[in-house]
Length: 250
Ligand SMILES: [Zn+2]
Ligand SMILES: [Zn+2]
Image (cartoon, rainbow, N blue to C red; front, side):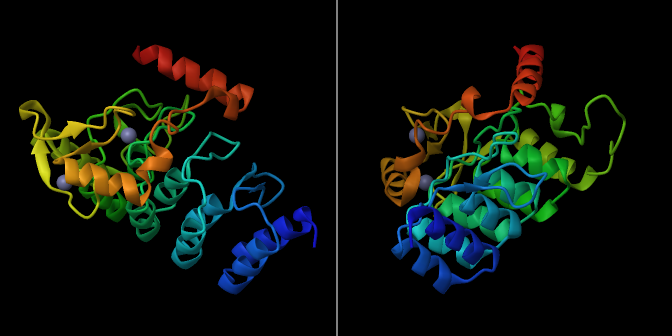
């Protein structure tokens, strides 16, 4: 089997949720981070991205154990796997990805965080879990302004995600943030400096050196410094829209 065949075999195995097939394809030399489009109108994305969309926890776990990237984005909108899980309300996968070191507030091509996306689609459980996992409810700058359901240029969907918005609003008011080591999750207040930011990516925060070390070893090492949104990964149209939404807020 040559490398391309192995990649196709891997894609089929992930689509069918065949763990044995995934193992066999990888053994045959498939690239774990190869990108595929699932259908004609979707843009290429990695297999971990597809498994996250589908909420296939077992396949996602296997891919992560085999070293799949948490920061390689889809061609469309530059979503990371965590955005894919959040948009589809796949809370278990959200949990899994963060346990493996995913940066909880990673931005997509529109500068939205996974929490903004989950809130946008009113996945209440996912919103709750993301907040527990340390997602910041007070971030701005995303195209989904104020975490409201927002379809550019229309009134569509406004007011349809009130339950999620309420959770975000409560979390924002409490001014409480959580340690980004998912096995800890200890609350702290930013103003008192009880949580210290990761000095390198400045996206994750921890209650102690031990928590930082633990999160580093489970996967933050592979994400830290690589989770900033890179313009080269988005379509020209997406880039223009992202630029526009960014400018409005800066
Ligand atoms: Zn901690
Ligand atoms: Zn970091």
